[in-house]
Image (cartoon, rainbow, N blue to C red; front, top):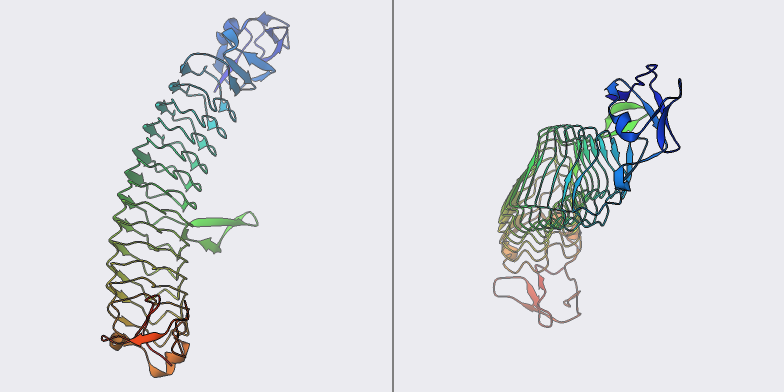
Length: 414
């Protein structure tokens, strides 16, 4: 780190006074340009606002508070350590050079800079704050250096021209909505040291084709200032990849215990997915609307399939439900129009309403369920009238019943 050293007495405490930098020990005064020539290795304390020439930059104690310049190509002064909150927010700037002295990019530092096309983040930066580059719609590429440990929530949200991103091994956390609605983002390379992906992190990345998530993915909560193994929780967050319409495949690491609600909802190009043996719960709408998904094998670790977990997976032809599952949620497989057969194990103690409604290809004869479990097969009609519209039911030639009013399919009557 650099410090100012008085050339007269060697003192390293300079304060801003009357437009000059004055040594606290001997009183020698220096202009800004003279003070810059005094930098040596060590530490320094500089107090008061510092205005560079033409007052383009307002700096206080190493923190850039505001840019007042007119140039669209910005070179931030050396020795600025922190880019403060909102310092460039909404300004008409095109390029920015950040010096190697900067360690932190603050909250909404460049948010809404719609003309910003490129930026180079130096290897000194360890933190990219919340909303730092949110809404930079012209930003096509950004290089995140190996020094960054955390990418804050909404950091690059709405960067609609961003095409690719490489997340270095130093990054441990990607905050919620960090890359949400980056509609041109087609590839993401995530290191094998990433520990946390927040909710909505890649939601709406419509051109995202593939993602590899490493086995290190976990969230460690801190308890009593120590890391307690009993508090380790591993999951893919709510809406994490929602509406990634070009995503065709994904590898889920073996550390993940829960796929949370809407995690892959609306991923219409997703054809296959391997759920590891570590997962114990598939959340509400986790794969809702994955219209290209053809088959799914649920591992023997899963105990609960949430409401609408696979609803609208109209290409799904087969499903294996293991004997570990005890609950199938409401409408869990509703609208799986290509599903032809299913086996429900004796372990299932609860089947939610309309769990298999509108499965128009499902032959009741191919539903394997023990007679003693049929009473828990809820959501099926008992009195001959549709639960949706109260219309009368008619027998189908392939078996089961269809509502003559709304077309709802029922597998059996009790």
